[in-house]
Image (tube, rainbow, N blue to C red; front, side):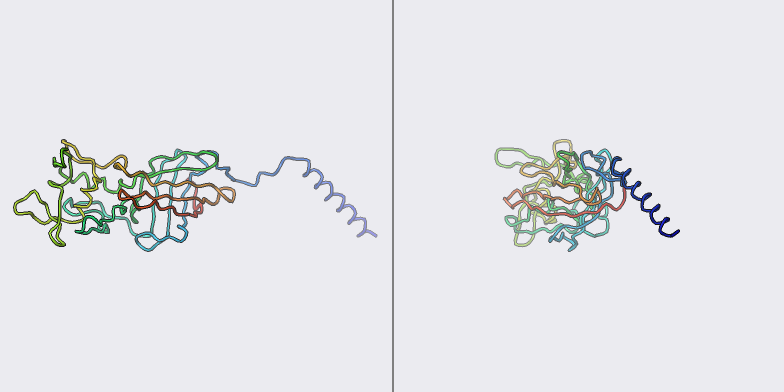
Length: 259
């Protein structure tokens, strides 16, 4: 009899608790984020590019972002690239050049390089989605600072390049055609100078604050998921100057630490 009385009392108490809970505001379950503010994305994010491998064979993607939208984007799983110290050869060392200039892969820089932390140029939130961009040519900033600027005649126009001629090739050897006889030069440097990865004028050369004509920034458009624990979106790499199509990659990232 005592047990029956105790059970009735406990059931009545439990029903009372349920009744109070249903009438109160929803319980705050913690640090969920709606994605409507830039600070919602402040974190270190790590994950992968879906069905896509970068130059080092890795699909890894990492984004570090603070509450003001400052941060970095990294792709691949390679050690950090050394700082450029030799202006006579192309940078980075993984840049692939060819003496067959007509078939040069002009999309290499916009495709991004593993081992480099690309500073985030802009970051903004619109319709609960973050849109950020990086300048792929930022990787050449230190290399460009090593270059000498040369006035070069291109048709009726004088342009400034980081080599003393428009370049050329004899067989598989890239040359500086301003010399007599022409002297060999590094093919990677020739490619980079021809693509005007540096901003050169009569005063010298420097890194580009924005991509050269016919190119644009690499961009990420993504939204939060799982109460802010995941970031899923599309990374768009830049179309090449020779008409190469733009590459759009799905990326899936997880919040590994808050800013």
